[in-house]
Picture 1 (spheres, rainbow, N blue to C red):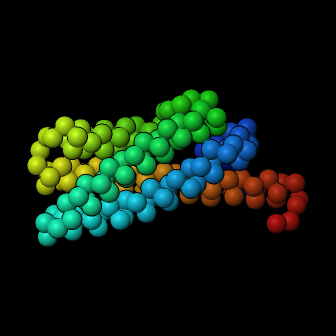
Picture 2 (picture 1 turned 30 degrees about the horizontal axis):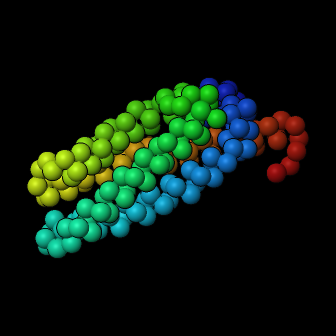
Length: 169
């Protein structure tokens, strides 16, 4: 079996320990699926409005709520990243995910500016929300794939270490 060095792993042993010990990991673990659930409900409401013209207020409020949860997960995620990696954003392990997160934040913020500033008609605002949602789905996929790869890599490393020390799994 091929040996892995720490550069191939998402977390160094010290970072993995900090990740496992910080309460911010649990916070992220709760907020991520909550945000996804809010996204799904909001997506249905936005599509409903765009296709039928019904439920303008529900669609608008749902996007605002989704955006507020996005801000919350970004703030707490930055704290988590600081605790685990020593940087609030753009740590080595999540650099490209954080870069794309900035686009997601920009699009969601543009939506809020459009709504509260009275820019664009509702249809345009909700089309902007859909663009923000498409970016969010791409970004969420980035994180899911990264974390899955990290889990699999850590399992392989643990198995290699167990084999090297003669410990049965």
